[in-house]
Length: 198
Image (cartoon, rainbow, N blue to C red; front, side):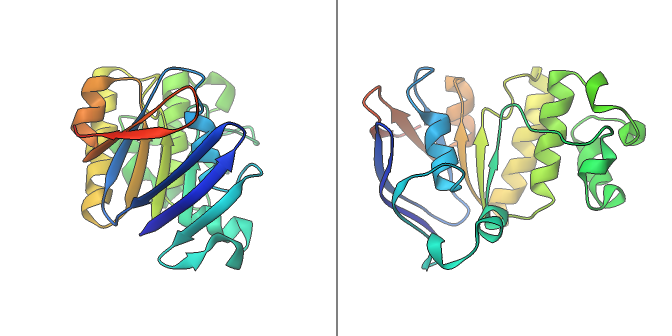
C-alpha cells in the first residue's frame, strides 16, 4: 500500500492511502496542481510530508530505486537518444507491449523526432511498464490518443491492476475517470483533494 501523509508542495497539501491493485482517478481543472502532486509522490521535486510504500519510508531508499517502484509517467515523456530502441534496456522484451498498443514491430530504429505525439505517449508508457513498478503515476496518459488507442491503454493498465499494481491516473475525461477509477479524487484550486465515488 502507498501511504501519503501531509504531503506538501507549493499550495498542495494532501493525505490519502492507495491500496494494492487500486486505481484512483485524479481530476480537476488545468493548473490546480495534479502534475505537481504526481511528481511530488515520485520525489522528482522538493516536497514535505511522509510517503511510504509497504511500510518503507521514501527516504530509506535512493531516489532511483524509489522511482522504479513508484514511477511517474509524464504526458510528454522525455527522450535523450536519437532512436526509439535506444531508450529501452531490452527492445525485444518491450515488443509485446509495443505491438499491443498499436505500434509496428519495426519502430525500434525510428528516429524519435519522426514520432507523433501519440506514438511518443504510448512508447513512454511502454518504457515505464517495463520497470514493473508497484505504483504507476499516470499524468494524462491518453491525452494525445484516439479512442481505440486509449482503449488499448486502459485495457493494459487494467491487467496490471489485476496483478496488484496500484495506479493514480490523472485525466480530464469524466467518462474515463469513471471507467478506470475505483475512486475519484477531485483537486481544487487550493491544492486539496476531495473523494468522489465513480
